[in-house]
Amino acid sequence: MLDDCLNYLCERMNQSLRPAFDLAEELVVVSPPSGTETTGQVTTENRILVFLSNLERDPFSKPGLVPGGQTRQRVALTSKPLYLTLSVVIAANFSGSNASGANYSDGLKVLSHLLAFFHRNPVFHRQNAPDLPEDIEQIAMEMESIPGNELSHMWSMLGSKYLPSCVYRVRVAIPDSETILTQTGRLGTTDPSIYRKGE
Image 1 (tube, rainbow, N blue to C red):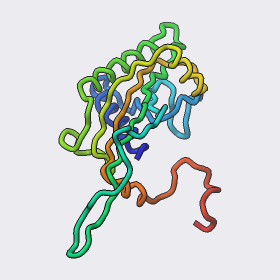
Image 2 (cartoon, rainbow, N blue to C red; image 1 turned 180 degrees about the vertical axis):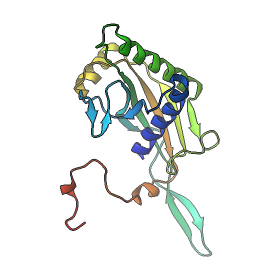
Image 3 (cartoon, helix red, strand yellow; image 1 turned 120 degrees about the vertical axis):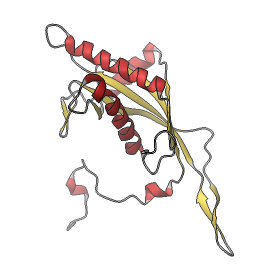
């Protein structure tokens, strides 16, 4: 579910950037600021990085059961909707290594575009975004203002140099957490030794 949320936001950003900058490839990737130029097979140099910096349960979201479907003699119980608040960082990993510093300037230009995009599109729901992942009902974006000392601490904790970035509080509504528990399939980027032998 967390991966679905970040991947969906990543795709929406790429959809907005492609025509604006005449791009042939994706510029936004889900990746931490690892300090390396590649993450697996995905390059992170001269890219917009999207990653999770914090996760909280919405204070108004209470766990429990509510009546669901009803048969002739029984009322089925289902989990209450799950509401989460994510802190999502959108960072421009563009270096100014060339003589003109054009790469760094390009990164700021792209970041500015994304700020405007989310200002105009702060909420994604079934009516305006029918392609939302099945397990997510709504995504609401709100830009955070982080004091300089907290910002410095965050980048230090991540083990990375500071990158031009913005942080959004992303509120996610998940109507049925059971769908997450029934997801199956292998993990894509983990050491194969964790799997059962013979599979």
